[in-house]
Length: 228
Image 1: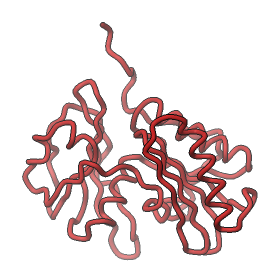
Image 2: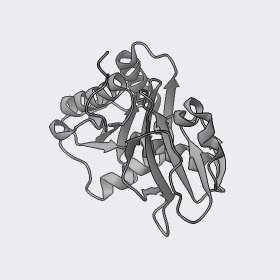
Image 3: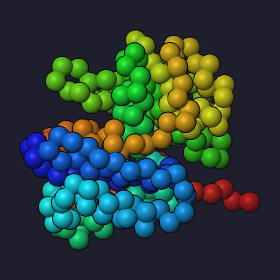
């Protein structure tokens, strides 16, 4: 993506809404913590940011959106609105991992750790998890060092280095914060598209954007409720 390109990013996978606009190296963003009316809020924020930047919707070159894992409804909203915007504009879409977007936010806020273990509360006595390390060399964004997982709330084995923890899983299961090797825990950290736009731009530059019709949500869980 060249420096003058325009990208719109959206997230609603964990409840709160986050929308960001990247243009000419500048990132504008909005966040709302209300858990109702997310689709309308996302679209309103998108229009606000475009107006603030003096840009019309057709000038957007690509849409970035989180695709999960997260709450079932949130993932559907994030991918559905992202897909709808991309289709309406006939633009490609970059799907981002919700877990990696959380890692981007925490590692930009805390410069000390080498990486982050992200654990999100998945309900039903489980967490969504992922390990992400800071990129090396010219890669300024995070890099996944393991496959993402859904499992019981236990502390994963951590690679060498300094690691912090982030995500709602640490709030839902406080003993996880005692994991050996964690330099700190940010249990209130949620996806922030303002922090994720560089990640999205790297993905677009690598050719990872796809046609909007091919975007698929990532749940990591095949069923969303257990039988009574």
